[in-house]
Length: 259
Image 1 (cartoon, rainbow, N blue to C red):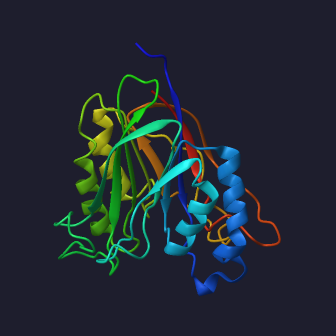
Image 2 (cartoon, rainbow, N blue to C red):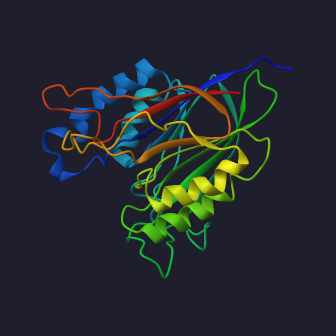
């Protein structure tokens, strides 16, 4: 039997690279801070949200030697904004990689939910099966970004993801920007479904994540790491701006999984 392994997991909404309203907080100005943060935390698994071609290119250049980056855009041509994932090469063998659109036709790129309040933007998840080196088992890693407008859409998107959270005994971690706070019906219903299966929110009670470049006195918690593994050292990475420049309009969150 192998010894316990610690896997550091991060969820991080990068904020789209081409937002004209960001001004001094455009991605070009934030990129060095993001790179320094990733280097200092050295996560083994990273679930990014709002990754674009521009930010993915930066991540490839900055992380490419140490990490394998995977993911596509959410649009019909698999371009556009997406949920890029990064896995530390020296820690894992990649067994499988799947992209699922959160819709009635999950294999159709660019597909959306119908007959509900989902925004015009398709939503997707990347699902990886990994074998951590030196560990007698597998680890499933899921990263997503739920709809920013519709409560019903978010609930239905989570129902789709719940299909991948049912396998007893398979260590699994789900990262993402859920665009819903812990007291929302969306999160309460989701947790009521998964907690009996041994799942918990590793980020529970550690503070808010969405600050809008410092616009909120109390950041809103909408970024999560859910898992059926034991966790330690969960943190929101609150870093003050320098010359008005933040890492993102979200704080990253990290936790250590104990396999």
